[in-house]
Length: 168
Image (cartoon, rainbow, N blue to C red; front, side):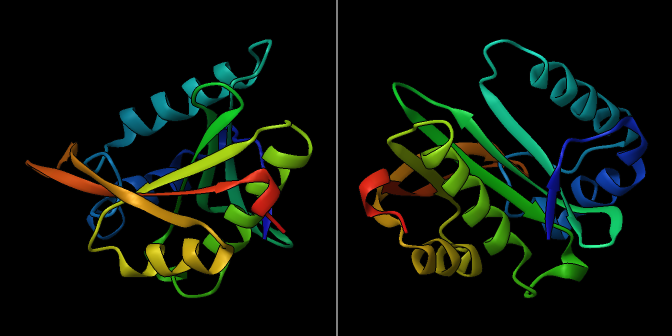
């Protein structure tokens, strides 16, 4: 697995992920169209140029293959804190890409960015994602009630976090 900056050339790959209801069912937004995929990539590229940088929104690709199979993000959220997010194309589920991306970004956030806390908010029905963050050492904190509005309904999120001294 490789994490890299997005390129506008990634539009079709990104659309295949964020336009897929199987994937966005688990995310905090509804499926998006091509124009929204372009806007997402353009926004990511703009934010990557900001000084200081407050978000690392990166493409996930396989070694030796530049096609985007997912994305992973750490965004600053408070004092020395970050929020983790990720999505992988449905046909690549179960191969460890999300785990590798989350581990890599969390390690980077603690060792290079000097963050103290990383959190992840996960839909309560997303057993695979919950198992993944627990495997990585995140601790369940509680439930954020009606946290996101997606797919026509309010959805709770289960909040997980890990602190820098707990990592690794």
